[in-house]
Amino acid sequence: MSTAKLWGGRFTQTGAHWVDEFGASISFDQELAHEDIQGSLAHVKMLKKTAILPAQDADQIIAGLTKLANKLEQGQLKFTVENEDIHLNLEKLLTDEIGPVAGKLHTARSRNDQVATDFHLYVKNRIPEVIAELKHLQTVIIAMAEDNVETIMPGYTHMQHAQPISYAHYLLAYFEMFQRDVERFEFNLKHTNISPLGAAALAGTTFPIDRQYSAEELGFDDVYHNSLDAVSDRDFALEFLSNASILMMHLSRFCEEIILWCTYEFNYLELSDKFSTGSSIMPQKKNPDMAELIRGKSGRVFGDLIGLLTVMKSLPLAYNKDLQEDKEGVFDAVKTILPSIKVFTEMLKTSHVNKEKMAEATTNDFSNATELADYLASKGIPFRQAHEIVGKLVLQGLETGTTLQNIPLSEYKKISPLIEDDIYHDLQSKVAVERRQSLGGTGFSQIKQNLARAKELIK
Image (spheres, rainbow, N blue to C red):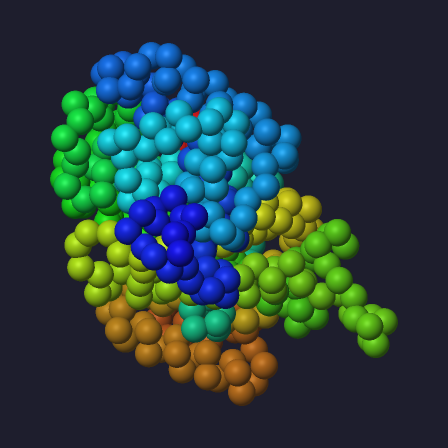
């Protein structure tokens, strides 16, 4: 019994429907429908230019593909498992539209270079969307930082009060992380913006094709220079997933701190009701669910990366059916990171900063201990000795409930007669922050310089 498969000439039996369902990818690769038509249009225009196809045939195919594109836009195309994937589904629909001449479209092309081209186009089209959302987030961070240059908060190491810092300085740390994300995605475009089209199955083709022409038609900067690499490379997708994972890690870190800052114990921030939820049993609850969701969704994006790495790790050259598993993770990552950035941006933008509570947290602690150690060092006491002296004062203060700024000058004089009243000025949290003017420090003038730099970066 002959098979109806488009590739079935050498087969005498067909698989059961449940086998077809297992092998088919149309349930997810229909996501590439737009890119597949885009790639086919470039290919047939190249076949016409090189006279591989008669102009009349090529024009008929171009007209048919254009009709399919319009129907796709209107949601009128229906795909079936019987036709396996988006490529054969669209070829069947094209055949229904214009007749047997549609079969000439596949001249000098394989599904191997076809799907690789589609996948490159898909990632190439999504990266600018991700970068745009990141830049919007950076704009919000800059605006918030400008409003909080002199907002003082505890800086933490090991989740313990370390030294007072500016909240703007804290925000700009995340700006820098997201800037690196932007730059990673920009570099990702370099390896994505390469055309596999014309590599055919794995060895190229005997037809006199013009790969540069079809690449230019599709907006690619270059072509793959090795046909084996062209059909089997998924580095661009791995880079995208790696970049997406690092981005989600950054968002997750930020969300973790927002969740902490919103607790009763910290109370540094309050999220808008629009980005919070309540409890079904506890009337008083206001939960930072959107932040928690973004934190949780980082795991699925990490999984997308590990999944594709695992698919790729043992593949011999060139194309293998395993590569059917390359797309779902990327589709999932795109559908996860774009709304995650958007929700996070608006959640952050509409949050309320409890400036008084932040500042208060630095007045009754010992986060100014380094200021005292530095002061003693500036008076000629070796820093290691100064460190020990202050450590003992902190221990004493913890036992007596006395902060460093409440120790009488007479007690300080016992440590060194060089200590003067100006010690109390230096021990103020705001002064401690303002004085840190080393490059990249939390000092106010440094922050203002970094804000100017940040604005230039996102232009």
